[in-house]
Amino acid sequence: GAGVSQSPRYKVAKRGQDVALRCDPISGHVSLFWYQQALGQGPEFLTYFQNEAQLDKSGLPSDRFFAERPEGSVSTLKIQRTQQEDSAVYLCASSLTTSNTEAFFGQGTRLTVV
Amino acid sequence: DQQVKQNSPSLSVQEGRISILNCDYTNSMFDYFLWYKKYPAEGPTFLISISSIKDKNEDGRFTVFLNKSAKHLSLHIVPSQPGDSAVYFCAASALWMRFGAGTRLTVKP
Image (cartoon, rainbow over all chains, first blue to last red; front, side, top):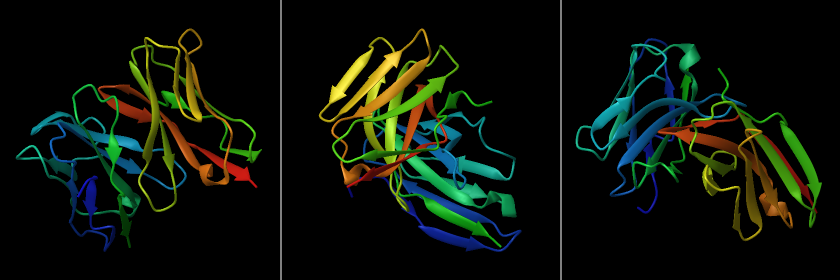
């Protein structure tokens, strides 16, 4: 596809369950970002990759959050032992270059922890 | 800490008039500024951007103004159309983007 693709679109997890969220960036895009968006808020930075290198993970809220991009394309955001406060929309964005002058977002994954 | 602020949660304008959305930032290290539009249940859509070395960028009905001394940017939409009704986020970038909380724009026919 031409855009950033995220799956699943919706995920309901029981508290304590592990989840994995997938992001397929635009082909050839070097930079990939994960954001968390709570209701009524702007997206909050989680982590940033340049190709397969995770250059910044300062936004990950706890060590239960883990992201990888092993081959420099598809990325997975994993949340272990989910808690109710993890409920949010998780957005992935990609950018062609490292200058991040224009990043394109996927539709997001809405995670609900019950 | 909130490095990017959009102080108006909502704005309502009449179709055909100008919409002005405002954004303030605190960090002078930001080198790029962007505006995104978001419809419900969709991801943010890139609208327009501006480099910190410029003070104005125009794309059709959309113009972004940057005042570095005031650490302020604004998005002007002229003329406003009902299809412009959405939530608008400003973002400031230094390696990665930091977003404001958004302004909900409603354009009334």
